[in-house]
Image 1 (spheres, rainbow, N blue to C red):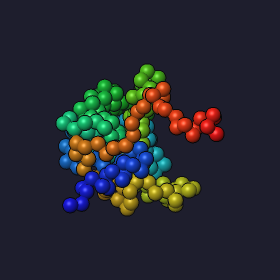
Image 2: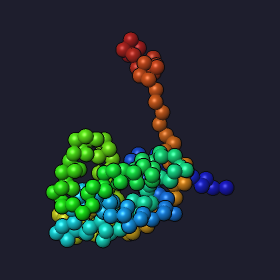
Image 3: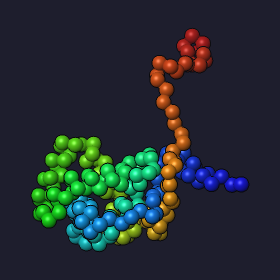
Image 4: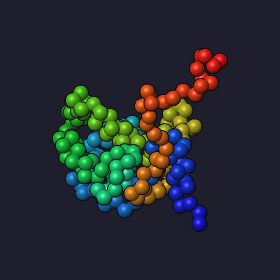
Length: 194
């Protein structure tokens, strides 16, 4: 019987930080939740000069696919459980809805000052979802100097076209931690043995 997990194990061993998988049966966000997500995304990646907005792209739908359900361990990027992310959108993105760009930017600057690690996690996740969308990849290819070489997400359909259901198993099966002082050097590595 072939190893059902062989491709996942190979991908995990590749050193890639972000694996292209998700939860295909993720429930959609409510209109209110989508508005919060769109406000956050559009503040971090402003829709201007022909670049599409979060709502136009449906970034909230892609984000929903990456959030870990409550019954699964949080072990892969973006490291957000669904309820944790929804709570963050209520706390952080609700005040962004209906505000001017300048007001939204100031609120996110305050978040970055006060909760630097959380801000970095959210920003990285937003960039991952937005810039992995096939329409944005096409824009990058057409409109930027070196865009012709940009591969973006898995092609031709972007990340969503190749989502593998993560289920409840972590993909990373490598690595271990050893305290430095517990490592013994091989005799041939010491100066006396040279």
